[in-house]
Amino acid sequence: MMQRSLIYFPSSTVDHGYPELEFASQGQVIKTILVNGGQKKALLYFGGNAETVAFNAVDFTRALPDHSIYLVNYRGYGGSSGSPNEQGLYSDALAIYDRLSGQHSSIGVIGRSLGSGIASYLAAKRDISHLVLVTPFGSIEAVAQAQFPIYPMKYLLKDKYNSAARSKDIKAKVLLVIAEHDRVIAQVHSDKLVTAYTPLKPQVELIKNADHNDISQYPKYYQVIQTFLK
Image (tube, rainbow, N blue to C red; front, side, top):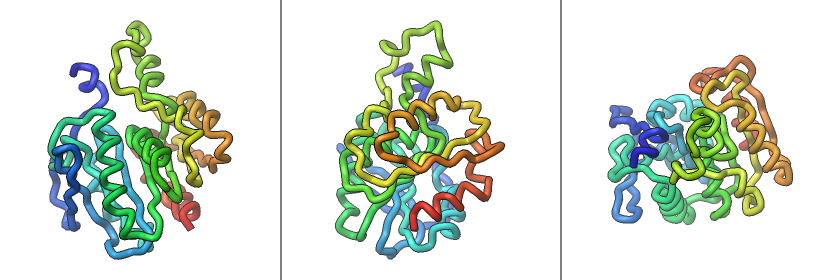
């Protein structure tokens, strides 16, 4: 559908040298890169709408050595089959969690940009220990409406990713990491999520000078995640 071409920009397969696992979900094969395998605690990582998640492997190996980290290639991304859509990505997240839940003492989730919508959904549906949302939004619909004000996004967008509405169902500890100069998701949209999640008493960290796409290059980014996960 045309509206999905505004949201999803699938990444291609890249050589990365890390093990890959395949998860079956609704007839699709979802490829996931495993970093630091064999740890008791696990993290699922859901990236941005144009992100090549493999490029995080080296930094995660160094920054979070006591967690097994599963970098999820969405449907249509990084060699996974199918085409991305909201309900499909939600189903894939549940399938991955359900397969891994018996293998680890706890599972946390990191969601960046688009991935924050998937991560918040999973945290509302499953037992998640820690929820980290990076450059997050209240809903994709609100972000799109601000970017394209003359179009009625309420009716045009099928995939809405309404993270703000999920707060009542989330039991995990929550960290929100916001870029000070985010030119993709304006801070007003992150602020809406902060407000919606107020009952959860989230830890909110602002990465000064950071933009949407370079936030992970700032030392504070991994420092706050490391501290939060301890």
